[in-house]
Length: 282
Ligand code: AMP
Image 1 (cartoon, protein in one colour):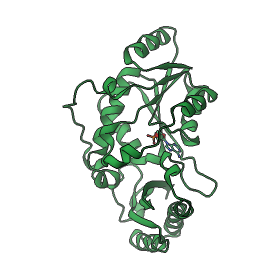
Image 2: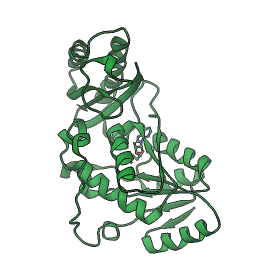
Image 3: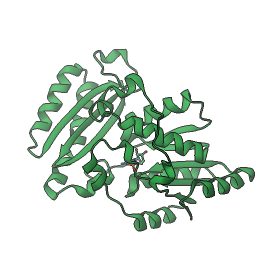
């Protein structure tokens, strides 16, 4: 696996690859890699000729300074995992490399960022949009892989890519879970044992909500039931539970008006903030 820290070196290499007729897959990450990330890498390795994984902890998308400081970093382990997964290129730039100047440009994603993560972490998606568009410009991938785990991020990137005419396909990969259902996340390593046990209730809450909706219950009733279920876990603090349209992510009032529903949840297990979601056809 080739490792690049500078965008200019990566650009030269990718130009040669493109001239040779190879397609390029990009997997943007913030490192501390786990099996969820590796599922994106493995799909890219299957679907594109050259897979580029970027590892960059993007400071401007953190709305909480402590969260940025505490964000896990495991560079040696990441490199080994990527090599074993058949990744061709690791791009791990410095903050100065990605932000040579303080940025003036600001993204705004309208209604898509007024709900859920965008509401509770104002400015978060502005940071995500900027870093992902920089990576798209540097790598110019044919395919870009994102995890359904961050569903709102997926929808925002899909629209950003279409709006800015990026010549690439955004591919969304299903969430990889631990055996007890907890969605894999780099933040899971920070869970204390008791919080780790209770954290699986977020997934259980989503399943409960989905099953009730499929039985024909009203979204408002389901919402109250799911919230009550999460309250039975003393170590969990629910931030939101939303039954939303799978495409627009806006809250749903009447289930039959929608083709696909997204059940989305966010909460704290101890002091670790976790998110999860399920998509379901209705
Ligand atoms: P992150 O390093 O957390 O920014 O994640 C990098 C990419 O991996 C994003 O597209 C995430 O949605 C995706 N990802 C994170 N966790 C999982 C998971 N458990 N299953 C599938 N994809 C994931």
